[in-house]
Length: 400
Length: 159
Image (cartoon, rainbow over all chains, first blue to last red; front, side, top):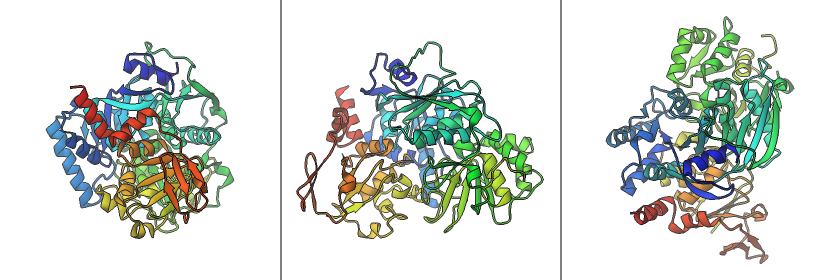
């Protein structure tokens, strides 16, 4: 059976068939300040005790710090509820983006199952944890029962070959893969990566994170799988190969993350008013460090604002210690809180009418980051940084 | 009853924009339903209206506020050629009636229709747009009235 089937079978304590519906025990359930308020109210109406307070995680990251009184009120409600319920795994707004925190604090583990009220819960697949993204009501159900209903999914296996060559990055590899997946039905299926030995953990997080944009139920890197979890290719419906050596800098054009094109096809043709580096996709130390390397001693183009939002406070502290933040701010970057910010069109860096943003985030739907007439191009931190310098979408292989 | 017709790949950001996700009241959310795509909709949508869309309705964010906004506007049914995974689960879990109708894209916005047990019937042409039946497991949840009603029933059963 495939890796995902092996995890589900282990959790249920019995064999399972692909396509079967099951109520599967989970190891961890989490929600954030946007998904948890509805989930908590629904849970409270049920009037049952929490399944296991040790295994519920609440993280504030979306409206951090609160963008309006309504957001502050919801956070206040959650803070009190977390206290009443004795939930220790509570991360207030001083921590960072949920998917980063789950991995950074080692809350998610290989071979386990995480149910999360956020669509990028698949990010935990970077460590071999099956992350299933759901909505608020399912967070409520999981907090009451410790289970989530699911159809045992089919698997798309992606074999990675070779090695990434800078400035091409995991973001570019993920965009190439999303472009390949466009040709295949991906909805409800799990992407299982193999041959991932050359990728670092941050690179794996970026790739796992973006697989939800193809429609995948989740994504799994299997290098760290516990040895007792054996799996094979039963349940694999499609085999793909991704040659990392041949990956070059990519863009996702409006209005879909899989609308991909090589950067050199568009370079110098699209002016950008905003450049954004951050998010659960690309806000880690390595990402900020690459951007700082490009921007050091230079100035962001006068027609472009560069916003940097580290994925966590821990990332921010390390970036300060290593001089990365000084380089970025000296180049003219605006430092945003270690939180989701403008990525989801919430606050802090929203786009005006007709503005174009080049962003290291994961979604470029119509109006996603602000005005309905604004546009978002997705790219790697290197491409975003070079484009910020030049004021137009630019190839990071080009001399600045 | 009016049809509100949408195309393929409508994401949940279109249904309710990120900046409103702090409004968790369905009636408040409904004021911003499809705001960027069809700014006139929130002011005109009436209880009993129907949303019809093409492929993969509800891609993107897991925001349950998208389903709450649709429910808050009084929409009685959402039919689409196919649904994105989390949007589909959210609708099932919140008891919003869904129909997966492979030919939904052919239904016109001005068409007079009736809803049947098995799909959508055009009153002008008499054609039935057949829906794919829900899996029995999912039907158990929808027939209970949503996930929490289902959980409550099972918790009681389990003692």
